[in-house]
Length: 201
Image (cartoon, rainbow, N blue to C red; front, side):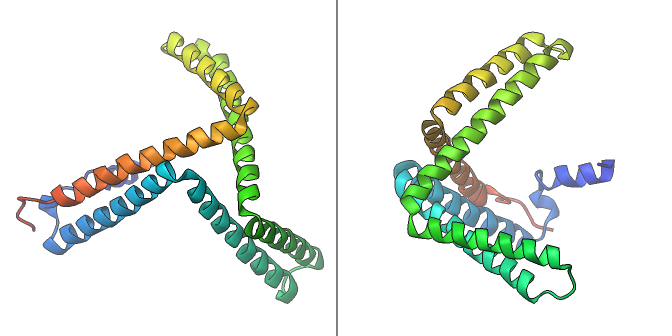
């Protein structure tokens, strides 16, 4: 990343209302407010009604599988510019997506449990690998003690989640809900305070 790209990336998170027009300030405030309200609503739903929220999210995932499957089937059946092998693979992938989508849509509760277990196992393995990598590289770390601490923490957390993946997924889901509530409140407050008392350009 070049210095100019880095500067523009940082600038996106440090907007100065004094450099903006009145309509730009209002647009940013509205965007922050809407995003904050949406995050707050989702956070409350996930935190206080986790079971219903998981089922809705699972149903949306099933709907995505179904739409993606139909798209792949259409690509495989109607595309004339690709090879027969590629078309066959698109049709097979489309059928798998459609079957998976139908299973999820008709059994959202059971599918939510399966997805939760899969997610928990995946995150558990990821944390174990991250812990091992951190411990292996701890010799080169500037603060070796912290590296070892985080490596051991990652290993322990990964093993706990791996052996009780559904519990781990529930905790992560609950944590995500609380994080969304905090993020939503911060964005709503920022929407009310951004550009206040500044004479717009």
